[in-house]
Length: 229
Image 1 (cartoon, helix red, strand yellow):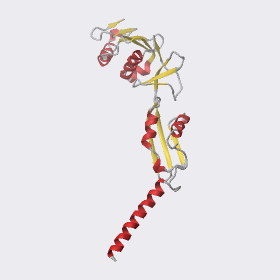
Image 2 (cartoon, rainbow, N blue to C red):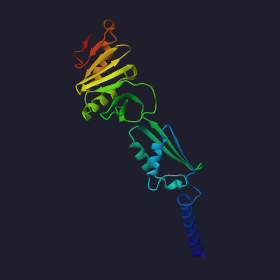
Image 3 (spheres, rainbow, N blue to C red):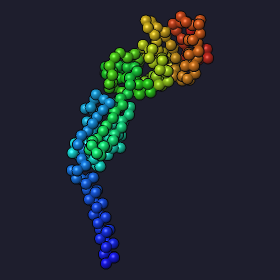
Image 4 (cartoon, rainbow, N blue to C red):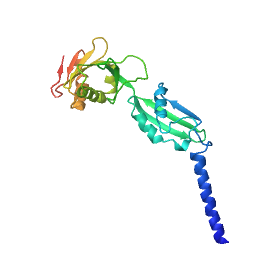
């Protein structure tokens, strides 16, 4: 009799486990009731990612069968998305997708006339959420090397310089410049993006000197021998 009860308990546990798995993964009890996308105006791009899933992620799909990691990986492949957070809310039966778009600090035109943007990390992307004017990057050519050099420069600029920038110029990887301030402003010639931390330290020191109060040009191409005019 004891053995029969033990077998019965094991069968009951297995049946309960199978039932729980069925309810979570296959039944209509814990399915997606709503999909909430926040943080971006371009919800169509996010919907396309969800529709491309196998199976597509739609209202009515079991919450447990949604591959959150796969969705996040696809979202991270979209250039204008900096970060995505995906969560399943079991009680509400809701799939929440929170997007953090990249924040553009400068723009440039590609050869086909398409406007692209750089963010503060140097990442390049083609979709911008916010409006308003941005300093343009004037590229003498569209090589990957030149864009990489610009990206490296932008990723190391201080917030104050980024905020005050009105234009960037990139003739070659060894000839990077920016203009800051109002009117004609001040031209800063960085040379290449190499030793940029040193160049920034030298610039911050010399531009604070009283004798350079009216300077209109700083040449940091050779940081240990800067030129001020």
